[in-house]
Length: 384
Image 1 (tube, rainbow, N blue to C red):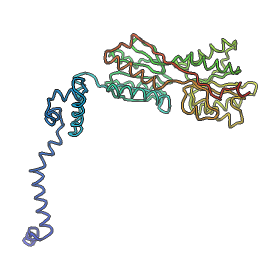
Image 2 (image 1 turned 60 degrees about the vertical axis):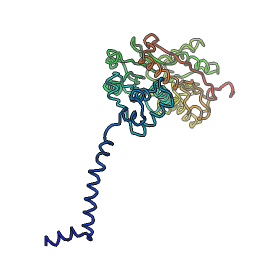
Image 3 (image 1 turned 30 degrees about the vertical axis):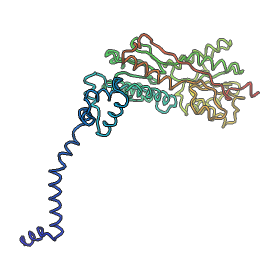
Image 4 (image 1 turned 120 degrees about the vertical axis):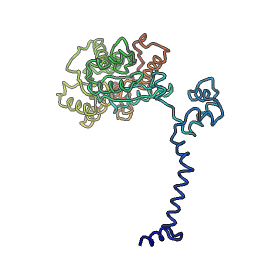
């Protein structure tokens, strides 16, 4: 039996015999011919491989990969093409050890479902990419505890700097002390927090709110409800200040009952409308100034569904100039808040400090311009 099997397996005309011969030949080919190739493929490609491929010096390759101005554009392009062809990857870890820089910037935003924050991040990313930095983006979901975890995680990742807009209920910035002690620059954007070792990029919230409230007063509105977020955040406290100033100049007494603090969400807008509708008609506000467009729009839509005319029965205004403000009917009066420029400027200031061109502590605050955008939701005089 054993002889029969041996004969069968070794017979040149049997399928098994042919298969075993092919397998033996393939194994020989793989071991003798291909293994050196596989080993070469497993090895990391270095600048010396690129230099050999192009017949130039490794120093030239190194400078070309860094876009050094001493290397002409044509050579830099050839080096980049060869690096891609050969599968070169820069040794980030070695670079970090040499420079003690990760070329990464931590970003913490309070919420992700915001057109304004999306605009801010776009500005930051464009500037960071232009300067050779990478962003690591986290969001706090408007919770101080999550913000603290994000701050620590980014610190442990050894980011070169931090861009942060504090959460809705953040009460102090003690969790940023490790950054300040290590001289890691911190730039606040949108929502600021004064600190001698940081800077902020923001708008003049007080003036913007003053302008919008004055516009409502000029249109004949007198019982203006102001809807804002947590007054611990400077943006809402400052907008309240501007609102009060405009009322004071118009000799209209400030009424605390007309200041409503909410989460500034879609639901907050709908609930606000329900609250207004539940009031006696003589007690209702004749205008609503909400601290963001989302709340203003959902309040407007709910009031319209209930039969109120906008702006004849009640005027509605928002803040931010989100796209939603232009598609709702009537279109929403708002404040144009330059989100892209906020992000771009914050990132530029941080990077300029990191590269030693400027010291951000000499300019603790940068204020960008806003514009009042008047639309039909407050055009009461026009509609009369």
